[in-house]
Length: 289
Image 1: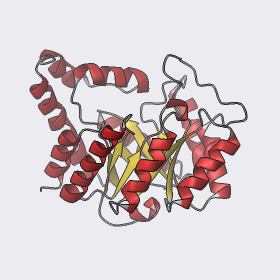
Image 2 (image 1 turned 180 degrees about the vertical axis):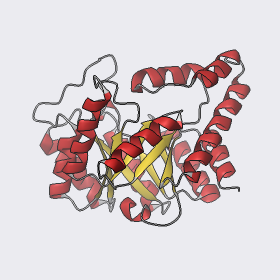
Image 3 (image 1 turned 30 degrees about the vertical axis):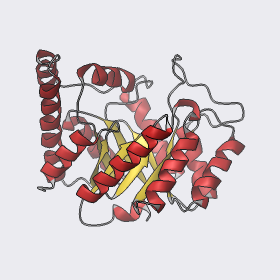
Image 4 (image 1 turned 135 degrees about the vertical axis):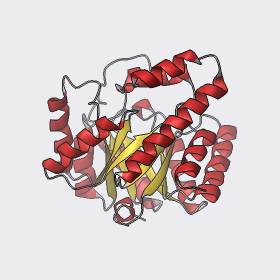
């Protein structure tokens, strides 16, 4: 099913994001995790990331194909600009569409590990907007893209970031999934600005339940998200107590999600980090399972 169609429904759409494991054994374990979440919580769709520089494209394609064909769950395939020429990207997209996948999240992608600046491959796309235009012109798929309530970390200011967000809309994106955030006010301000500009496509909040202090610090430094002072203080107080940190993270995510749902968001996209417990706990709470 096309994800844009899902968002036209009256109920909120719940989705999970996973990253491709590095080994066959881990891949089998992840498939079991996805199956468990599907049976317990019935997510509307599942997305699979694409490593920096396209480093996991084979496993990404394999996993989204299995999710859709074997688990009967709508799949969203991430595709990035990095590491591929335009013709190589076309080959990837042909394989995705050839396996019946109707949904693509078009991203520029992160710089390869150990580097700080994105460098397009020779003959490759430079920006997500170029990939979005290519998809819109050549493929009959539902196109998603990322947006940044606290601005992209490489943007000099919010206005510059907003210019690129609007450019993605002009290029044909059908829905946005936000970068993770921990303060809902950033999302609401971003949404108000979009609606005031006439942008009516779904803007879906991306939520990551915190499970590890050091890990979330790395993530926020990389993506430019901030942690509210009161939450940061609580996490630091219990940094050496893993169960308490997870409980704090789950509690905060539940409060975030409930407020977002009360405000009428089209859905919530969970960044799972391939761990089912935290996401399962949050979604079970907000769905009153």
